[in-house]
Length: 174
Length: 63
Ligand code: FES
Image 1 (cartoon, rainbow over the protein chains, first blue to last red):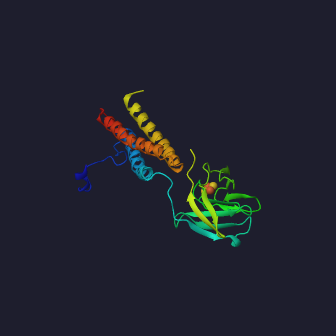
Image 2: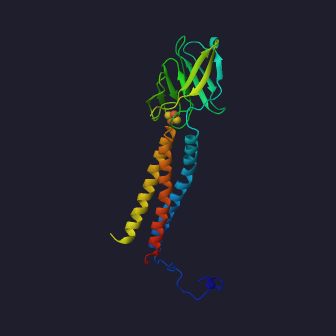
Image 3: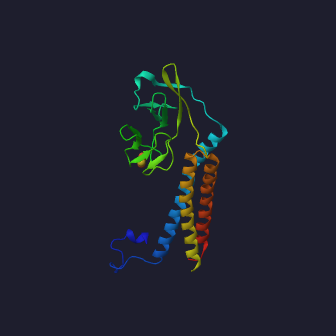
């Protein structure tokens, strides 16, 4: 076939039905199967990091202790107000809400649906995710409406000498 | 139902399993059940050789 390409015009008088359709359907099917196998490969490779991180997490089991971190001074937060802070890492957004004189709750504020930042709605008394209207219970962090299915990770806080400190991220009870 | 359709079906099942396992793996990971996350990860890894094997055996068949 390819040697014909160099001879112009090559001796072929069939210009309209010159596509060789033999086995085309079969190739289609096989090509598709190849794609599925490729997809399986991609799935396999992309699940590796999850497994690796999970394994790492298992090795260093137990409550990870982070250095306690000061969130805010007591007199800076009015009852019913919320402050944003970072805990445990520099890039982990968290939110602290003062529910009453001495009741504080803190959560990791990345929505458990697709990681949008959850914010505190004082008037409604609930936490709202702006992305798809997921709602969370302030007392427990449990999802109450919208797409999220997993509670927000709770951050333990303690009050010490007129300031609020983040202590640790609570593990889920299974 | 001839042979090639069966191979095709098995591959489709593999794809479905991949999706299910991945979903489960991510959820178990987020729930901090790391053992289960690893199990699903391994399952996901196992599906690939199976799919490859099925594909190869399909190729070996007479056209
Ligand atoms: S990201 Fe929060 S509801 Fe979708």
